[in-house]
Length: 344
Image (cartoon, rainbow, N blue to C red; front, top):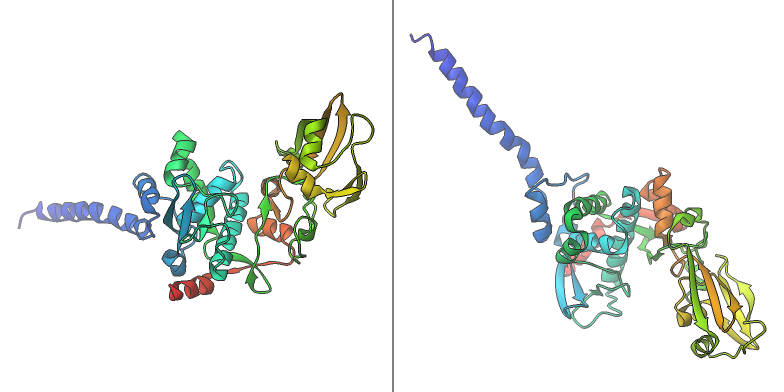
């Protein structure tokens, strides 16, 4: 018997194992759903590990998005759509829990829209646009141009946030909510009826002190007296008071202003003057009217900078969502998504 034969056999076994084990380690990370071209490219370098498994219903849903730049409709897988929305609506530099909260609002918005078959603002054949009229959305190519060398890192961060909330939506009384959000509060959010018509029980005014650190917290705009009068359709003259604020909202924004008997709402004034917020004050400076504002956006629902401030203090995305949307629950959307899939 050859005394070296056992050594040869042992060597062969070790070589075989060295080939098999890496394959076994790789297999679990290659079974996930492809994320279109974008996911393929990321996986070719360092595939992001899923923190949760995607629901099967998620994988079957596509969103018909009207691309405002190309004037074309694109069918986008739900996960890819959500990544594009979060990337367009919130800075990738924000904390992970804030990004998860944004992913949850984005999912809730589109699920609600698909279920109700509401295509308001979208052309025929599309379910949603890629503008803030519905939800802003950016494609792979647009994100690559915007992020440059940081593309892979930022995309993975947002993808992880979307996957961490996979299959979840925000509900009130078992139904998807109108997941409104905005950039920066003045320290408080608004009751829905103070900006839009109709009182919605989960869109209540709450405190949001974290927004003071937002670069958009303070704003200022200047108008000539003539421009100011033309935009608002009022007469204030070249001296004296500009207008008398006669009411404030629960969120401490301007509710009504009296211009010599003509009453305008704070929302009217904000929109006609293009102000950052309806929390404003003004003063004359010669022939100019200087308007200062606090906050940025309509003020209803979740404040994005507030969400980031909460995340910086260690709050979870669930804490954030439950703070800004009163009395809501975070629930599984699997059955709703499966129902939509069955109807398609």
